Image (cartoon, rainbow, N blue to C red; front, side, top):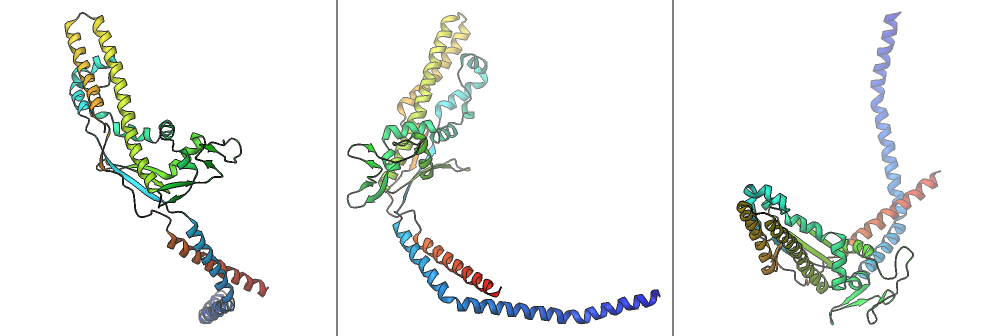
Length: 328
């Protein structure tokens, strides 16, 4: 009984092997028929595809032409040599304990002023001071176009009237008629970028704007302001340290301690000197910003190509859906 059953299984396998190529061939024939029918359906709906694709192409052309040119200006900066920090670094080991008591930072090269400056320039407080100082809100929030002939920014009169410095925006709370610094910062962050190369430490500041002159001016202002902010911070810190060290000198009669304190005052005086004589305190300009002649964006040809592709794919899907619905 077992041998008969085994023979029956073997015959079934042989029969399966013999039949399976025909089954695959039939399946392939069905697939070819389906693909042929799909192609025929697409061909019958070719005018739908052509018309829809043409509509998307025309719409993408009008959309691309409606976008204003955006120009990008950038400056390449290098971290300034901190000679005064090099002098302090030599005193770190000798005066570390006393300096810590006096509240003076003798970290030398360990103090990353470049990193601190980059974080400050990205901060909300820096932007608020920058926006108020240079009155950039209209150029940031209300620009409509740029007149090349007269080199003037054209404002949207429904938003801002430059003659009266009056804002007319219609917004819902919590937004205000005049943009707040928080709202303006979000817009500014989309146009502004600052990057540092890992190998050389070079810093690139870039700004995008509808006017190449405004973009260039903002980059110049940003570089000037961050140098000024860092200069003021170090100057105030050095002055406080000197005042404290002088008060400690008055409290001690030990000649050795007085000598050390005077040397610490001398190092802080060097910091004050560098702050007074250096305009480019943290960053030195290697390649200054220029008024760009060529636009940065939009990529109008790419927009049109994507519009045509989208129209072609969408119209093809519509034709296939109509075909499948007609089969039911």
